[in-house]
Amino acid sequence: MYGTTGMLGNPSSAVVGANLVFANASLNGTPELQPGLAFGMLIDTGSPVVLIDPTFYNMAPPATSAEIMANIDLGLLDASGNTIVTIQAIPALKLSNAMMDTLGFGGILGGDVMRQFSVQLNYANPMDAFRLGDSGTEPTGVETPGGVVGFTLAGGGQGQVTLSASAAPIVTLPATRIPLTVTIEGQTYRFILDTGASEVSVRTSVFDALTADSRPKLSGFQITTVMGGANASVTRAKSITIAGETITNVPVMTIPGDSLLDSIGSDELHYQLDGLLGGSFLRNFLVTIDYPNGQLHLQRYTTETWVDEFQRVGIGLGATPLSSAHWYNAGVVYAGTDAAAKGIAVGDEIISVDGAPLDGLDPITADNFLNGTPGSTKVLGLGATLSPSLANTNVTVMVDDLIPNPQ
Image (cartoon, rainbow, N blue to C red; front, side, top):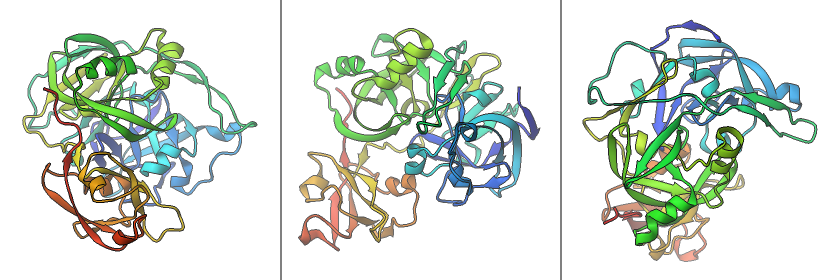
């Protein structure tokens, strides 16, 4: 058990974006350097341990094995930057992680801490999006009692963290995986709960079975995982059910090769893992993970508050080179969309959306400007472009439904 101080159960200042929850935090008393541009800690049941990118806290990245493995004091903060609770002497891994650098967050609150508490995620209310510890109160706007499913923590073991040839320590991982039986369109599969996954993720064979009826799917969806960047394919499941709670038309993705699922399944669970229950399903619920009692509570929101991330202008934002004067470009342009028809190409600088400048915005906030109602339009302000005729112009682009619901 870890030493704790402060008021467990109080809400921590948080950001909800891309179906993920990020809590404001400090490391050994030092807050993040870029408030507003960095999110703090990703709340991630899919990570067995706490991970820290020390550069977000004005600390040097690790250079030796001894510097990778460290005990830290993690302070969770409110909206004013005041400490709500400090968890002392947490075993953590200090890394400079590409995923953190890309999305702009300083670390991951993993299962080795959360398994000591009851954890609540409120996707519908950023002011009360994360609670570590049971407050004994329940927010309004959710169905009662909701669905409940029991679990026994699984996984764990030993793994190697490779930073360099001279810095590759062996670390011991506790049992933190939350196994779940999930029903997709009448078929049952073995999943784990993964609040750090923005979408429900399934192995390729499950995805192929879903799309055998030729339902719409999107290829080239750019994501970042613990194993690096990847191009995923996305479709919609007609229904996903767990604990008696069913959600329809859920975005579901697969990553070619199944390497992450295979790694967790073979190294920790010792059976074939079919998927990760991520944010595209969880965002429909107030989620309470009662680790001490082994119960997952899902209470459906009475009002839908989330935005469908696949109803948007047909591009994904990427970071521009450091030599550029602007922050974002078109990292991907989806085939068959109005954006592609208007001649927007990968690498074209995207300076503004409907007159709102993107420079200075974090990646999630900037990307949200591209969401909208299919058939409506957005005005993209372009900078340097592949096509000279589009450079430094405004282009009106229609919002597409990238993955229509299956019939």
